[in-house]
Amino acid sequence: MIKTLGAQIKEYKRVSLLTPLCMIAEAFFETITPLLMSMLVDNGVNVPGGNMGYIVRMGCLMLVMAVMGLISGLFGGIFAAKASTGFAKNLRKAMNDNIQRFSFSNIDKFSTAGLVTRLTTDVTNVQNAYQMILRMCIRAPFSLIFAMTAAFLVSARIASVYLIAVIVLSGILALIVKCAMSSFKKVFERYDDLNATIQENVGAIRVVKSFVREDYEIDRMEKATGAIYRLFVKAEGIVVLNAPVMMLAVNTCILVIGWLGAKMIVSDELTTGDLMALFSYCMNILMNLMMVSMIFVMISMSVASGERICEVLTEEPDIVNPKEPLYEVKDGGIIFDDVDFAYSKEGHGEPVLKDISLAIDAGETIGVIGGTGSGKSSFVNLISRLYDPIQGTVSVGGRDVRAYDLTTLRKNVAVVLQNNLLFSGTILENLRWGNPDATKEECVRACELACADEFIEKLPEQYDTVIEQGGTNVSGGQRQRLCIARALLKDPKVLILDDSTSAVDTATDARIRRAFLTELPDVTKLIIAQRVASVQDADRILVLDDGRINGFDTHENLLKNNAIYREIYETQTGQGANADFDQGFVP
Image (cartoon, rainbow, N blue to C red; front, side):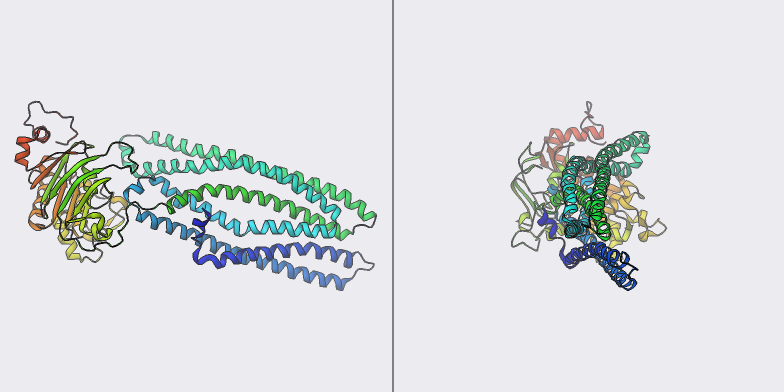
């Protein structure tokens, strides 16, 4: 974990090295000051008539030491801030870069809320811990060592009191830290649940309101925040024991030092200035010891966060480019050769696709139909290599998809997924996700093919209309048509519409399919639909049932020879006397 996280320090190594040096210098100057004060009292104040010249010289020297300590601390803080924030920036960038390389199977391992927590809360914890390591984790031990050394130089007898107090206090503080650590670790596990609750609540706020579930969501939020609250109170309740234990130790040391010191002053074994210095070192030593204990708590809290960050950084994408990839897709011909597919690489559970073998010619329009869970989306996901089959091969343009450069393949296979998503920005900016260099004329043409131009032209700002995040300010059908236009701008050889006209009325759906037939004759089109009307004009229709091919033929032949397709058709058209409406298809 340390090696993985340390690799992200990168350009901030210099400030990361300068920070501890500044902290050590600050601790040194802080330790020198009580010694100078002792000398000032003994040699300047407690001499007959006083020695004003000596007092002025030592006062100036103490001022210089204080200024040097201040400057050291100031630069240490600046360097630490640069190092820790830069480290956090690199961590977030590295995590985001790796997430962008993930295949769908990698993404399936992490919840969205979990990734958000890792990118925000966990990185902040590690950032704070790193800053504390650079500053306090260096300063506190060195300050403690310097102060203890100076105390022994002043009086080994009295300094032994500090040593005993440090040993006893170290054991007590270690016990407090150990008890607090387990509670802090549980807190960050609960953050995933909290983020998931917030994400669902905010993202589905329209559904929440339409079903009048505000009270239920409020109760969920109270439970999530309450769990974190209780764990934090428990952990902090243990940690706050540091303060009374520390004050007990400090007061005990002061009493012992005062009693021993007074006796030693009377017997001329100790001077007044030395006693003043020892009192200063008492506070210094014990407070730095408490600081060390808090550092351990902070670092312990960040270990769990660091491990969660490393899970993302070290996750290797399941789908990568071959050593010598192909950079050209010949055409949109598709071949499935004895393909099995399961979402679990380890082979747990039944495959969702079994024994899939078929050939699709370039330029064909293929309809894909089947019940819920029949494997329709899984089937098309293999074409653009969003997943890899566990057996068999999928070929596009006569070559195995695993032989292509991923970018090249996905530029030539445009997919409009079931969950249509638009990003915040104008309509033009959203369309240009398909092709960043597309002209406005090309965008308009794509919208005409997708029948999106008719509603865009009615908007006040037309193509400069701002789309809210997720496309919440346009209807479901409008969102679908914009996503189709965006896909068309890729100028693909294969176009896949995964139930992406479900929110479009039948007349518009028919116009879109007609436009595809006349304007995209060389593009292979795969249309997944629940409505028979959306696929019956296709060259051939693939019927999937429980992950297997149940039929693959024209509409007319399937009506004659395929019982499942015929039942779906009769159910949706009302031609079957005993239509079964439990198929999960939308009439």
